[in-house]
Length: 346
Image (cartoon, rainbow, N blue to C red; front, top):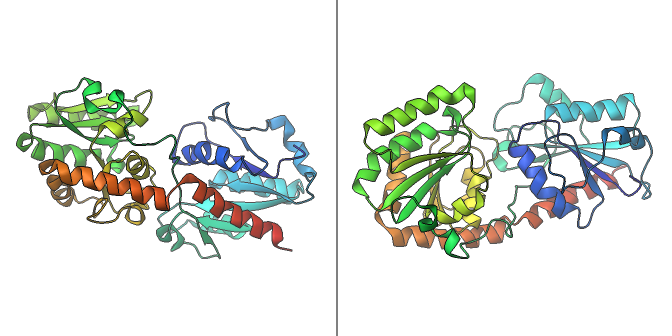
């Protein structure tokens, strides 16, 4: 702990977008920074501190600087405040906000107690009433990359068709899975070379929603061409196998999946939820539609199914865009600038 200057807590057991951010970002930060994670649900490959080491936070590291506690949830801000203000640990508190809504009074109070605040995009920044920096999430371009072999071809999936359009993530109303299904029911009969692939967990709470979608698909006679794969062991090859990725969320925090698709050289049609509008260049790397507008989603997808060359071109453009603007190293650099500013404050 004597060399650790940043702690990235993850106080949530279940995998989430925030957890995914920590898993991807911390190894890049660790190249130039003494950083550890703490909390459940994280892979053993990450640098970690143990709960029994918490008392060591009451002393400074060798550098003499206050350690930074980088929170991304309310619970983590609360924990940081307890450590700093009750146990008198020499900590600076940083919070990353991805919320695209007005914060509740308690959250606003917590945010005001932070030493620095990061917004993940201009939209989330617009809801902050305190000084802040904007640092957008990035994507690991080594992990998410263009097709590199036969296993990355859609043919390797064993599913019917020549091309695939995908929608990945938890199956639920908030994610707009029903909007995607309705668009596929309307479009696939006109495009027999295409198959739709849906991956993601269906929790007990949303099982009836998923079952209704499957019944709707069966009634349309498309059960062989609109496929629910459930949770897959490795989602990365599926980004490379689909020619078009659709992110139809009704609301979102930030939303990493379009960046992961773009890094895989895949065109993207997305709603304007989360930070999607800040990722996609309309008419060049994909298309944007109003969140919750099923008709607009269907019509935005239609040209891609009709023109494979257009889909391929926008996929190539998407890869260039994500390499220029969203490498994970760029996010790490932006966060480090915030840390350095906090350390420079008296």
